[in-house]
Image 1 (spheres, rainbow, N blue to C red):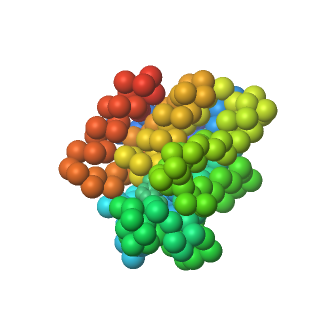
Image 2 (image 1 turned 135 degrees about the vertical axis):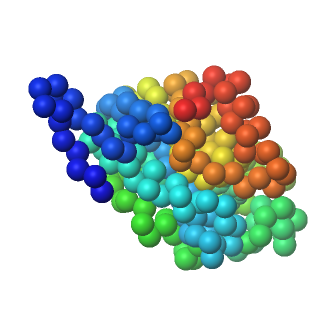
Length: 219
Ligand code: VGL
Ligand code: ZN
């Protein structure tokens, strides 16, 4: 870890985590929230049931952003995909996915290296919903939608803008970011901190383009 110190005379610290060419500097403040989407073993560990290629690489990015967010007084939100053993979300029950993130299982736990701070926790995918968005649950068979209450919780804390990272670009990150912008939050997706499932090649890139079209900043 390189040491961080001020340039003589300038008073400006060089942050090694954000000074490289691939790092976009997201500014946090008390009016911002960082939403860390589904950085769980089943997605982020190569032994996970629905491992997302490169999923483990988002952990250090998430940790850097969590630290920066907390230092600036921003709210942190951890989301977890949280399914019952049987749900129309799973292929064995008529859906499309292998069994993953079953409530209380190892796969549903947050990655062990993910930094834990005081935060809002949102668990979605219970009661047979797909649980892609942190803001809204949708049942795949009935189409019924229920609000998770996250938008109101954020507004109650004065949050105006959200930064989203995590897994996976083409599912939970996409759904969460699209709902965030619909709820009126200025929304940024941190490209370095997301990875796609890519069921079809290019799904991740298409999701990022769709997010841009919806007014989301993809940085
Ligand atoms: C997710 C597929 C199935 C996600 C959740 O977190 O993006 N993807 N369940
Ligand atoms: Zn799921």
